[in-house]
Image 1 (cartoon, chains in turn cyan, red):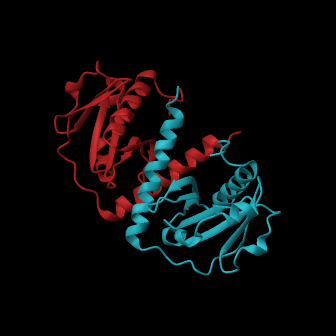
Image 2: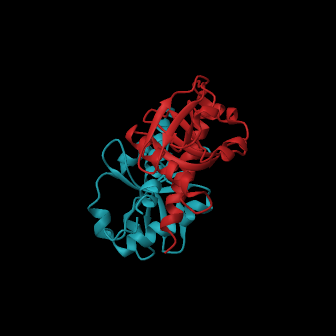
Image 3: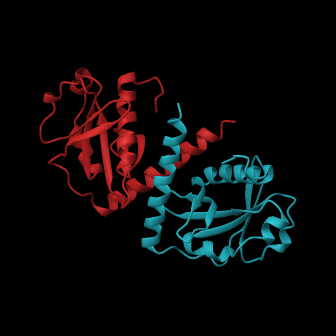
Length: 145
Length: 145
């Protein structure tokens, strides 16, 4: 998270999305590796266990070099790309969820049309993985002393 | 966590328990408020979703002024008291799980005899709460800059 490996733009988008998700009463976790080996930029858990995945695209190049975003659909109830305000958003298919974000805020421009509810077993497994990874990060951060 | 509100002894026991749980492949979270309003000192999630609660007792006074530990049994699969090496451990009923811990390590002395498996609905709710609280702590810690 904000660790210098990613661009400042991506970090700003990530931060704005975090704020938006907090307002939505979703708890956000960054960089969770899914069962497929792909890493979700942001995965967020709603109050009833709803799962949102957000894939950050800081630039057109970043977007064009990406693998198949369709892979994420199997691991969430709602999927969004999140891009900075100056991103050429017309390149993103109209049937995919889209968030515009800067460092301070973010806004959902549209919902995705491919989104379907997760099967219960996968939701359970994902929630457990999310929980264990998040707790380990807290422990790791606080155990450095 | 290690925030000065608790004694150095309690912090040491907590740290040792964290290490033990990591060895057991459990992810530990501290200070989770349960549905009853009571706060679990440590709650840990196993690889299959198993839940352990550990209540830290740093001194005899701390132990004697505690409320009903039986309340925790409804929120975990296994419950333990964790105490420092010099704690008068004979005061703790023999049918309750017990861990001896110092700053560097911890050991399970015995399992509790009252432990039963959690109902699925409660496990699900607890796992979700654990996940959201843990992720929010990561976010809060890293978002201070």
